[in-house]
Length: 146
Image 1 (cartoon, rainbow, N blue to C red):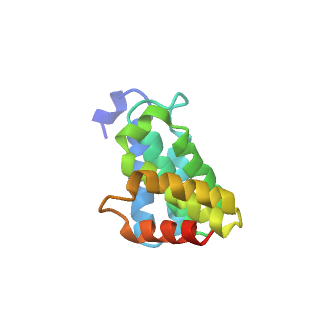
Image 2: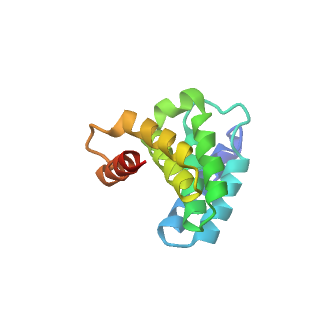
Image 3: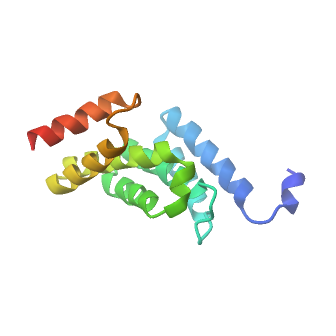
């Protein structure tokens, strides 16, 4: 702790809160996860920085909101990832998965055009890979049915 007192900015506290939020989420404690990750979000640099921390915090907070059934708040966090610009390069998995999750939220909300658009963008990145095959199948099934 003494070493961190001389470091500029709130990045140590942001990192701690992000990790504590992720642990709480993994342990099924959604309210603690949301509280920790919202606190981490308040410590993000206004200019976005360039290290991917914004993407990480937004993605984990979106997952916490999804676990609590708060689709609108989750969608806001996931859309923030789309606005992170160059940071997405350092967090490509979270970026692509955010497209799928936005499609899923749109589908559950009755926004069929939004669901189609996000699912197609997700498939543009992931359709021929090895990751998230169940999600790829879900997106393909939705697109073929609509």
